[in-house]
Length: 329
Image 1 (spheres, one colour):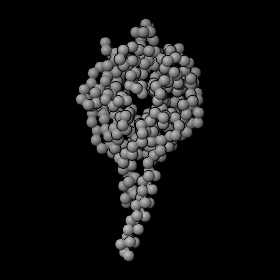
Image 2: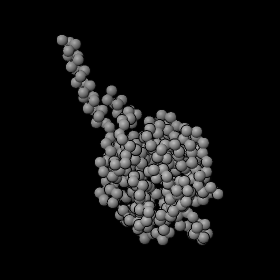
Image 3: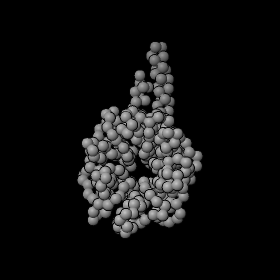
Image 4: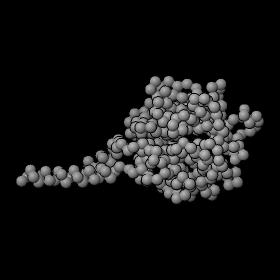
């Protein structure tokens, strides 16, 4: 009889535990969503909106500044930078569920980390780390248990096939160019432009990996040494030909982000009238840019998710380690 009672108790306990564990897994948005940061109410927080700019939803409510959100490949989690546990400006990386819940720090050891990017399988991240007055590129598993420094540079972006990381090489105030790192060999080389440094930043892979979008302050093309018009270009990976996507008339345009389909780009543009940054959307193959955001606030592009193009969900226990420990206790 004792054995039966023990068996029944074990079954019930296991069933309840299974329900609790299933509950800790995050759910991806059922429809396409853009995640971004916005400065309002004297604070910088992370929000969601539809691809047409409608239905804004606030995700973070901390008094600290939260910026640079990136969707996990499955859409279940958002990786971002925040100074919530440090002095203002001492950023580090955090992870939260897609609905803004379950916020946790990625690394136990403090460091200044920013600009994260996911590997295509969602198991690793690459990011900036500030050390002794320089930016370095690091790689780490998403559980934050081990870091590896791989290059001197900033703004890493992982290729869709997982084999390469494009990043910006050059000192903070000097001209820069795009370099390409082989993830397997850890070797890297200058990629664009090949003839020398230029004022380039914010590289972004197209979903198929055949193109790179970036912001370019192209003084040679403008033929005006005093011009400071930075705008969005797309580089063909094979032919190395460039295509200007956003004209100079709109002013400063930076930080391109591809749509999951690869046919549109988001970007930030400075509104000179209201002195704020706005998010625009434009078709890569031509068309007029469309402003998505309210001119009363400043906005910073994050990332674009669509469940129709997402990586199939494969449970990753390392993302729920802390909650599993709480359940065991």
